[in-house]
Length: 90
Image (cartoon, rainbow, N blue to C red; front, side, top):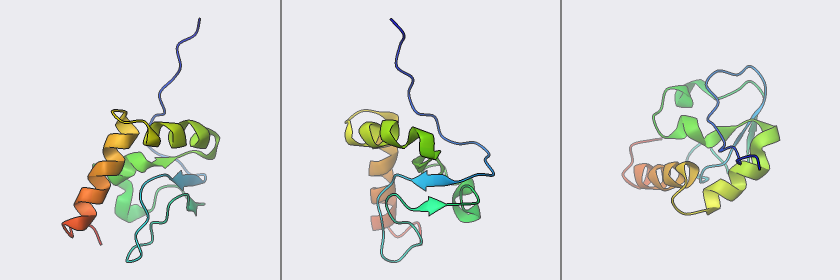
């Protein structure tokens, strides 16, 4: 039986990506927002946010992983919330 693949962050992409992290009113980030040109420059090198962008074909997997406690995407989601509350990301 084949082992299920974990969703991987997008390292470099020129095509569309979907943001699966938390949405914030004071940011361009909105849950499930689509960015046609890949990860926005201000988040490309961020150690937390860059992992919360997935290719559209991985969206269903990513949604499930974000909701499952203990997964990498769930951990990054929680860290994004903490980081935003502390005012580290605008």
